[in-house]
Length: 249
Image 1 (cartoon, helix red, strand yellow):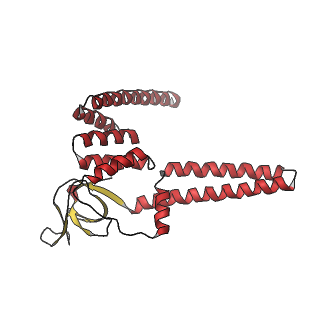
Image 2 (cartoon, helix red, strand yellow):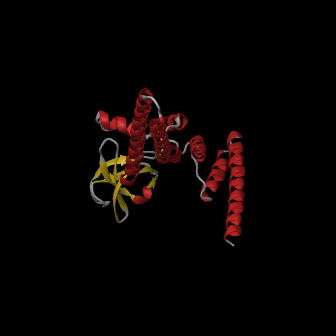
Image 3 (tube, helix red, strand yellow):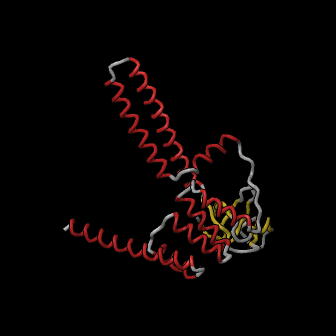
């Protein structure tokens, strides 16, 4: 019975993916014909089925950008980067979209070591770092086998040196993957979806206003109190905004 259940599940999944692929092609055709509203509806229909990919988010971001909806364009470009952190096309389009937002937030200075680690971490996603670590670990094991099977001193030295290098790369990849996972767990980001959004000193609309935000601005999220969430900008500024005014990444 289990076998037939698994086969049925596989067939249903295959049909679902096939239908999504057809919808994706229709959405791409609509986009090519400048029918951006239809393309957006079709792309979102795929997302509602629970199917996601960097290409889907990227194309959806492009469609929103063509509609001058910067908040949604930036949001979906950011989502695409979560799946393909090293994709230059996504980064370029995100940079273009960010350049057209009202708020110009300057990043706070970061020490060189942290900057290098963050840059390396963002190059690939967590799954990619895991596969790289596994690959180097397998290579380390094979080189150790070759080390013990080498009949010459020079061969043993060469294989041992390569094995140590592979071990270092395996541990380094594992560290970068774990570091990226830790960052994602510790930090949550969101995109603002309102213009002239007040950021209050306290979670109270009667308190003083620190600054105002506009659509498309990326913020990091802190604690939540009633209908307000504490946010922080990349320049270090912080305040409390309505929880309904942003969309979490």
